[in-house]
Each structure stands twice: as C-alpha cells, then as structure tokens.
Image (tube, one colour):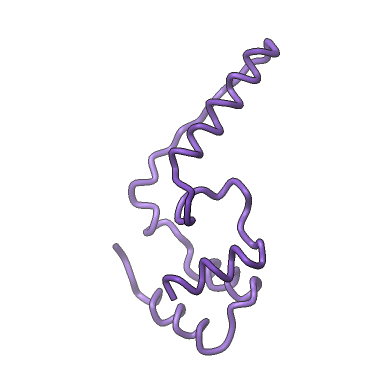
Length: 94
C-alpha cells in the first residue's frame, strides 16, 4: 500500500498541486519556498501580506477518520482496500 496508493493518486492526478508533504520528490521545504516566493511577489507589487501559522504536531490525531474514509471512496478506493483502511483507522491514535 505504501507504494501503490501514492502511485494511484499521482497517476490519476487526484492530489492538489500544492500538497507537498508525503509525496515522492516533494517536501515541506518546497511549501515554505512557495510561500516565501509569493510573499516576495506581493512585496514587489507593494501589496500587503499576512500569514497565519499553525503547529500541527499532533496532526494525525486531528484527522477526522470518517471524512478521510469518505474521501478515499470518492477518489476510487473501494472494496477490500477501503475495508483495510477502515480497519487500520478504527480506534487508532498516535
């Protein structure tokens, strides 16, 4: 699943183009570079910029598992594979 799910998501272009984390050849550092680049563009145009930054240290625990399962089904994950995800996410915390 570690290899197949990302391949499926990339091949079918399901992920948002600015989803940097958990993608092959992408990193959260690239996300920071995108933000900094946009800030520079706004500054060059003499526009105001503002940022709100959140700490997502416990991000796994904040994921709504029923919503995640619903999204997986919407994106084409069904049958045995979907049941596997449901089993893995049932009563789990990190």
